[in-house]
Image 1 (cartoon, helix red, strand yellow):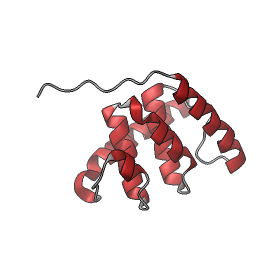
Image 2: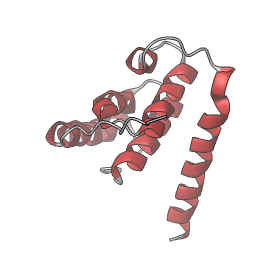
Image 3: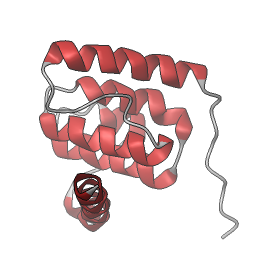
Image 4: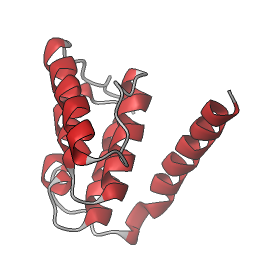
Length: 124
């Protein structure tokens, strides 16, 4: 129970950290373009933007970041996915590639079987 509480605390800190990045990272381009940028910081910011917006149409793009070469990007991707879906599907960013591959396959199946819900537009 303590481990789960610690995890949620760290997840919340991560999301606050992403908000604090604001203009610290050049973020030109669409979210999809930024998620494949060569700079891990830009990919991380894009993942945070998806989680903040709650746009489930971009879940497949976040799932693809679970296979990123950068472990920090993988960690931010699973935190965002858990925030948006409530599950980890057995994925851990630090697992060996063979174990991550099985979990990524489960994630791909999961997102392909779910209806896409777009975030509500604000009436500002």
